[in-house]
Structures are given as C-alpha cells and as structure tokens.
Image (tube, rainbow, N blue to C red):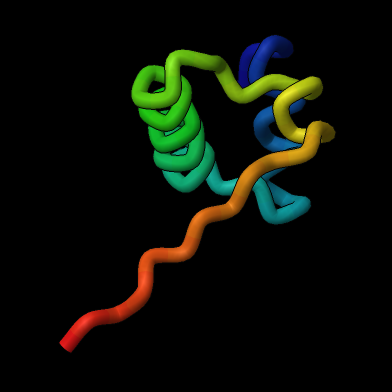
Length: 57
C-alpha cells in the first residue's frame, strides 16, 4: 500500500467510512451553496436562529 494511503487505512480501522464521509461532505457543500455561506468553524460555533413550521392537517 502506498505510504500516502496509510492514514486512510488507520481511519478505516477506527470507524472511518469513505463513502459515508463523501455523502456528508456533499451534503455540507450543498447546505453552504444554498445558504450562501460555507460551513466553517465560525459558523458551527456561532448562535443560530431556529424556526419551526407548524404541522397543518
């Protein structure tokens, strides 16, 4: 195995799942594009407004 892939092998042993990571990364990229702001450390540690949509019958 190439030395560059050594970290990926260790991650896989510790529960890292490459296809799941790709899905999560894609979802976070989509959220960033829809909201106009990338998901970064400042965004994750900041305060956020939460809106609820009432269920109507």
